[in-house]
Length: 320
Image (cartoon, rainbow, N blue to C red; front, side):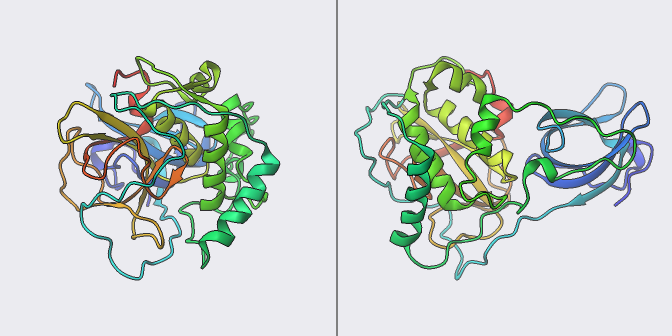
């Protein structure tokens, strides 16, 4: 699609949080670049323009764009293996026991040690052997994030230096294939649990703050995992759950898919579902709860209710 010069006559459909698109963008200086973005938020201004806040894979960070300056907008659909049958509607997956008990407070607790990249590679191989059968296609792109976009014209800019979190995210590709697999995600989470600690924290930490502090609470862990998935082109969210009494809570990372995945349990969110934070995008949400991929740990019960689904970047610094 091609955008016209004003937001009122733009031929681009109104973007939604979570949308992924290949775009051509012209900035206020007239420089035009091609890039891939993941929409975080869309909001109008008092002057009539519509602004799009998005994660930019070209720059490796969040950026704000003006809708009328997009010259092309092509939605991108992740590659997903079709499911054998639909997933059950709004039924929480059964809890998967964690190796350590977790206390029943609002902030779930734990303590972790250290693991090596070699052990992670061996662990990833064992995951494939133990689970058996074909691994479902992960919902991302089979190229490194740095190559997902290229300038259309104007001089190319240098790729920004990787932050500690992004260096860690880049290392998750154990087989150097240029994409992140489910088993590599599992290995990353297991080693993260051995490396970082559970720490009570008042506000949601950004990924680099999480590493600098040496860990965080459940929402910080969920946001850090979401950063890994965002880096590799997946569509991550943070889901917040509450116990039946409403006195306990837990946050997990959620991966949104358009089709129910093979082998993994997931939360089905039909179109029009309303949660505490609004109306989430419909789809199938696979939980990543600490080191448990495709299920939930014993940090919460199977009867806990999903209260909210947030775009990760929208809760940086929030009190939860």
